Amino acid sequence: MTPQPSTGAQSMVRTLVACGVDVCFANPGTSEMHFMDALDTVPGVRGVLGLFEGVVTGAADGYARMADRPAATLLHLGPGLANAAANIHNARRARSPMVNIVGEHASSHLQHDAPLTSDIAGIARPFSDWVHTVAGAGTAAADTARAVRAARSAPGQIATLILPADAAWSAAGDVAGPLDVPALAPADDAALRQAVAVLRSGEPTAIVMTGLALREAPLQVAGRIAAATGAQLLAQTSNGRVARGAGRVEARRIPYAVDAALAFLAPFRHLILVGAKAPVAFFAYPGKPSVLTPRGCSIHQLATAEQDGPAALQALADALDASHVQPVLPPAWPDDPAADGPLNPATIAAVVAELLPDNSIVADESVTTGRDFFRLTRSARPHDWLQVTGGAIGCGIPLACGAAIACPDRKVINLEADGSAMYTVQGLWTQARENLDVVTVVLNNRAYATLAKEMENVGIPRPGPKALAMIELQRPAIDWMAVARTFGIPGLRATTVAEFRRHLQAAVRERGPMLIEVQC
Image (cartoon, rainbow, N blue to C red; front, side, top):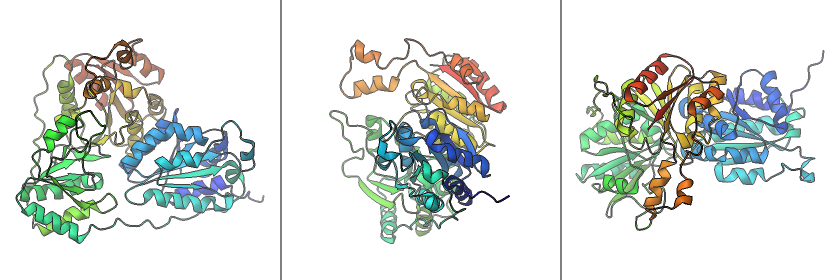
C-alpha cells in the first residue's frame, strides 16, 4: 500500500517533537481537528485538555517555569485566543517560553466573513513577542521550528503561530529540525565596574533580582556578595520562580502595598538590578508616588532581562573577591508546631511552612490572605515558589497543573484565593483527569477582599451598598466541597489550625489531586 503523504498538521507535530516540545495543552474546535488527529498519528506529544482557554495557557506557563522549555497550546480561532489572553499576559511577564498554535478558517473561507472570523494576529500582538501565519502546508514545519526558536529565545518569549485549516489538512513535507537559539548576552563591562564601585562605597545598597538570578545557584553567589559587602538581597514583587527555604539564600520580596514598599526601600541609596526593573507601584493612587524608590536613590542596571544575570552575579562576586565568602542562610523551621486555634494569615502560613514537603512547588495566588505568606514561609523545607507575575488573577490553579506535569515527582501546593479560583476553576477537572499531584488550598474569605482594601487606597473609605455588593461572594456562598466533588477531586474543610494541619498532612502523604477549603 502506498503510504499517505503527511499533512501540514502532522509535519508540525513531528517538528514540535524534533524541537523538544512534548506537551500540548489544548481547548480545540473545528478548525483544529486535523492538528488533533496528528497528535494521534504522530507519537511524542502529550495532549492535555483544559475546559477553558485560560486554563490552557496558565498550565503552559506553569510547565515552562518548571521545565525551562516551552509547551505548545492549541486554541480555537480569535475568540479562543482572546479567552486565553490573561494568562498569556502573566506568562509573558514571567518570561515563560510558550508556543501558541491558533486555528484559523481555511483561506478560501475567510472571504465569507463567517461568525467566528476575527483579526487573530491583531488579538495576538499585544500579548506575543512573535506572531506569524502559516502560508500553506509546505511551510508549516519550517514555521513551527521558527516559532519554537522564538519562544526559546532569551529571556523566554511568547510565540503565536496561526494555522489556517487548509494548511493543516493539505499534504506537506515531513519535518523541520530545531533551529539554533541565540545565547544570553553578557552583561556590559561598564555596568560591572559601576556595580563594584557602588558595593565598595559603603552606602546602603540592595541587589534586586528576578528571573534566572532567583534560582538556587545564582542566589548562592548573590549571598556571597551580600556577606562580603553588606548589601541586601531583594526580589521583585512578582517573580516567575524563586528557589527558597532552609539552606538556601534568601531574597526578600519587595512588598505589594505602596506604603509598605516605600518604607521597605527607604534605607537604600543604591539599587543594583539583575534582570529586574526599577520598582514601581501596581496602580496609581491619589497622593502617592508611582515610583517606589526613595528620592536620591540611584539605579544601576547590572544585567537586563535579555542578559545573563547568573553570569553577571558570578563576575561581580569574582571582582569583589567574594567567591569564597560564606552566605548568611535563613534558620531552619522550628520543630514546634503552631498551636491550635483560629485560622488567620499567620497560622495558615505557619502550618504550610511546617508541612511543605522537601523539593515541593508552591503555586501562590493567595492574594489578600497570603500577602505575607512569602516572608512567613522563608524557613520551610527547600522548595520553588511560583507567583502571579502579570497581576491578572486566575493563574494559580492552571500554574499548578502545568508545574505538576513538568515535575511529576514533586508535590505541588496551590495556595489559592477563593475569588481568584473561580476565574479558572475548570483547572480542577484537568487535575482530576490527569491525576496530577496537586493540593489546592482554597483560602475562603467569601470576598474579593483585596478590592475592599483598594477602595480605601484610592480614597473611598466608606463604599456604598452597590460597590460593596461587587466585592462580596456570599449571595450565594460558594460550596467548595461541592465544587471539589463536581470536578472529581476529594475535598476537605478546615476551620481550625488543628483541622488544617491534619488535612494537609494527609494530602501531602497521598498522591493525586485534593482540595482543602480553609475558612478564614
